[in-house]
Length: 152
Length: 140
Image (cartoon, rainbow over all chains, first blue to last red; front, side, top):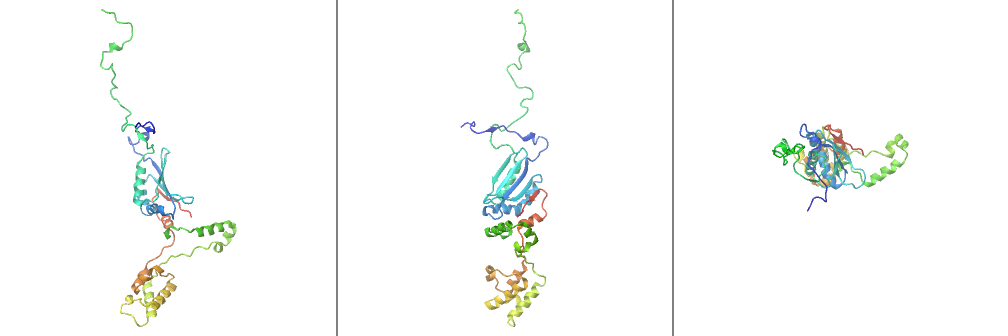
């Protein structure tokens, strides 16, 4: 029931991205697949048809296409972000359109962990005029410390 | 699938065995140890139609309809003679799976008009103009 078993974080942007300029957090995408495996057919079609369009639409992401080293390895799409996060997604037995959608989704993400977000809001300035406390709007004599006023 | 340059396991074993031989021999006589595979590329020549017409007239002789492209290839002997002669002349043969589609000389003309590319799609892609943020690393 509680969320204490799994990790959680607060809503945040990497280095206040978007407040001023916006920098895409995805640094590079690596598409590793075998040239002959059957489950890499979607990956091959993606490279033949859609990779150039994707690269043109996202000029700040570098797309590397290379063969997989080792026998019998599944095709994988690896995303590396500016904060060092590396996210690998299996693209075995996926069509070319699905891979395009997946790549677009990865390109729009920041590299922050995908865990429970405690609050859907965050602000660095929660109060402008000062947080209320019980002595707000009370005569300031109540906060004076010193010898007691003589009872009259 | 052939475009992606997939090699069968047998070829890979042969290449591995060849690499075991010292490289000096390979450099001096590359053609004997690792002969390059024969390229299946075919480009239709410019005078394709006239060549085909002359072949058809030679093989079929006098029994030709008005339009030589409508010549039916029903008789197997003449069909084989014609296709064998064209294969020898142009260096490109009709594969067995498409023989049944060659019903008249016009079909044969259409088949020989289509060029056949050699080389993997990846090699072509890597050589073509790519946007600067797309890198294809394909060394095989």
